[in-house]
Image 1 (cartoon, rainbow, N blue to C red):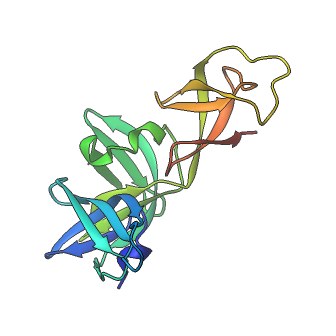
Image 2 (cartoon, helix red, strand yellow):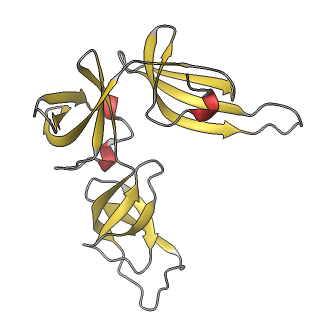
Length: 189
């Protein structure tokens, strides 16, 4: 049984008999000595997509939900639903745009490395890979002589996500982006 201090984004827990997925985590250290660190956690109900905010102490225990994880690949968009294909038996699962909130900016055609969370054989959520490679479609020109530790500039990626990149990066390049914090990691290729 996970403690609040051990929770990770994407983990599924049982709250009052309902499965919730961890969407955001924030640790708040108290200013007074001896006080416990509080964990501000935003959960999303896997059945209704309703959000729930909780403040928990680090040693508060939560119950895990019995769910199956299976590898999937993003296939296509069908109206307002995103369709994922099981890598083993090629069965398909679809999720609405709303249930993928905060993840849409990283999903592109053919994206693999995704884990689907299945509850009772039905898809409830997806876990994205730690990083994805996306192409820069718009950014200001590279600055000659810019070093790797220099300032950054905004770059719009193929999915619409805007990230800060080093000044020497140019339009058309592919970069690796961290899916947990939306930050530039490195050039790709």
